[in-house]
Amino acid sequence: MQRKIYEKLKKWKDKGMKKPLMIIGARQVGKTYIVEQFCKNEFENYISINLLDHPEIAEIYKQSISSEEKYIRLCAELNINPNLEETIIFFDEIQESEELISALKWFCESDKPFKIICAGSLLGVKLKRFHSSFPVGKVEMLNMYPMDFEEFLSTQNSGEYLINYIKDCYEKNSPMDNVMHEKLLNLYRMYLCVGGMPEVVEDFVSEEMNILKINRELIEDIVNSYINDMNKYVNNKYEAAKNESIYRSIPVQIGNKSNKFQYTKIEKNARKRDYESSMDWLLSSSMIYKCCKLSSINIPPEAYKDNDYFKIYMGDIGILNTMLKINTNEIYLDKSFIYKGEIAENYVANQLIFNNIPVYYWATQSNSEIDFIIYNEDGIIPIEVKAGEKTQSKSLNAYINKYKPKYSIRISAKNFGFENGIKSVPLYATYLIK
Image 1 (cartoon, rainbow, N blue to C red):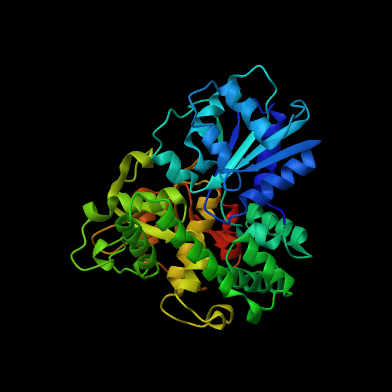
Image 2 (tube, rainbow, N blue to C red):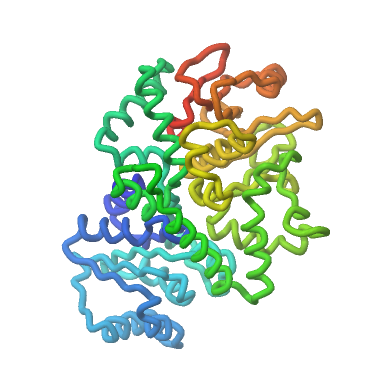
């Protein structure tokens, strides 16, 4: 399967690979697969070292010896003598050795032509709670996410044509042919059911994209693996229980009428201080994403975010709908139900975040709300999300009248267009927003 991160890996190679590359992302988003494809395709030789399979390597790096001696012992332990000019070394599950992460500085500064790439589950959590000396400035980092809708489209026989057609309409604000527009809305609804986890997408494609054959057991297995991680990579069972309580509350939290995350939805009388470290753990794991309310519409928005008022979104739309136990036919046949808007909102949050766009939202005491605020070369841009074709909104009009943005974006089931300063973007084209 094609992944857009592959081009970023090639750019790292083209820059000379002097700094080790670290790929950070949630479990099962495809880190190991894409790195191994990259190593096989771009290098004459590669060595893959999974620290879960080789705990002895982690033990070597705990020893009080020089980094050079540690590398020599690593080679002896694995019985390897790589030609460093032609070989790339991939450390998988590197979170198992904090000391090896620290040693990436030595690989970077060495006169030898090391080419080092590493990845691991819950690397974000590990780095957040790092106790050793982290090699600041000596490592490049890349975030990896589940497959976005463009990558999902690339699995189609006509994927390249569809992607180019969508891009052309987006850039020109010109309506798409109605037949193609409806076809892409159907594919969008399929994506809502399947999500972007590569294993699930691959299985769905192998079943000729039969909506009745989505294997939700695969998604449930991923959720269970996340829960297992909460028990394995935490300080104690009490913390694990709080992590799981937050995680399982999120599908309900997304529909909060208060437009913010509420700790009391986890359990009665719950307080922020009781769950703050668990929330931080989940955010660092990339299992969930945070969107803060802006206290004021000013540049830069990051300086005006209110950390006490925020929304939480699931890291994958397929996981959200599986946890909600929504029948796939309800989504695919575009039936009307109250939670439809919340699902579309989580989907849009995913697509924006997968593009590494910081997201915020705006709300007033009078119940006006803008789903997302982004900041780009055109300034602060409001984004409104509608699950269907009905797009009338007092909130967006109120925002435009008050702040007069260069333009606004409305994401909905309507076709492309631009009218009254509002750029109309179909739900399936959200990934093009930069």
